[in-house]
Length: 489
View 1 (cartoon, one colour):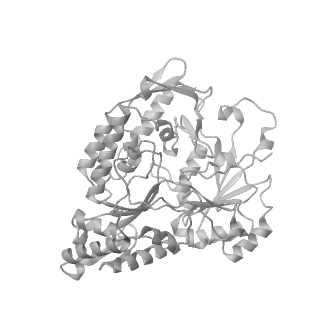
View 2: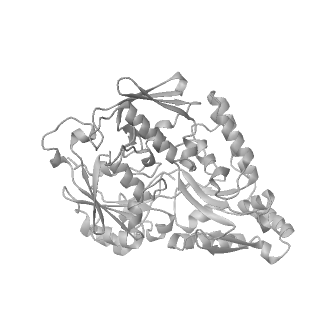
């Protein structure tokens, strides 16, 4: 997945040659591939991809992410970890909240507790479950105590949903003003960003205009030179890009990790048993799915948890090793023939969008499953269905994130209480090897239940003009806008 080549449509490629010098040091335009402009400015705890970028630019947490996806200081300017990874100590930067109140340990503690409390009932709330207490210490110090070590805590605290507020006003490095067709983001003065005073700092940054436009329009306007960066490329819009040499350095593919597959929503017909659900998973030729999109370098997987994560104990491997595709299909057909007592039992609905990318994916899945006697039909996302497409980027690189996506508390479809219990025991385990073993046990339990049919990593891509700095592909597919506001030297 880390290397893929694309070719832009001929008209767009020609336009790029005319627009290659656009941008410069003046205004900087970023577009998100989104049909709904209002989605950029949604609040609350369930943010669109564009809204995550906006919130990340306008609201700071204790820490933030840089262009490469690494954790950097924000409201806290330094930190250290003690007690074997169970205590994180953050020293706050000097400054005030936007309402003029001092940025104290007590006020930050209260803001962080509110943010964590607001996330209860979400998958991110489950990720934060190991936090046992948040304390205000002397000397502008905030301490987070964990029930068990969470090596990924900094990555979690850098999520836009963990941005902190204290009354009115935002705390991030940029200020937003709505305008027709989007919004403009401008950098705050250095002291308001926790930096020393600097003369002529305005000469080193530029305003970033953000827009939400449909994918086809975003590509066209990028080609005409109107946008410097287009973000939010997913499977849905992938057919709008083709492979070829003209786009090298322009189409950028994120090495994203996460979930891309089918969630089983109800146990019905051939999906009524784990055996029937396994047969469906077994019948899918994952490399052929990638071939339908003309992608090179995408690595498919049969695992629920992304392979080769830092805490992977090696308990679960790829499935059906040693079996050829013909043998897998023959076995699946036998299972379906035995369980499909009537035609209705062999009819499976899948909730999936009606975009160029989704239509290609659905056509290939329908063709493959027809070979084993299954009739696949598409329904709109959110409709009552047997299966639902899952296309989600991970927040941090741990099996815990993947397991939490299927926790029964979230009510997202079929689940496994046994797997939840194993993952819960891992939360209480301080020994890293034991914790990894329990997470592997939870993955094995979920795998045996066959409630999710994985394809591989989610596809995320962007259009980036060659002279743009402050953008870097990363596994979180998150590209901070403040760093794009810095004028290249």
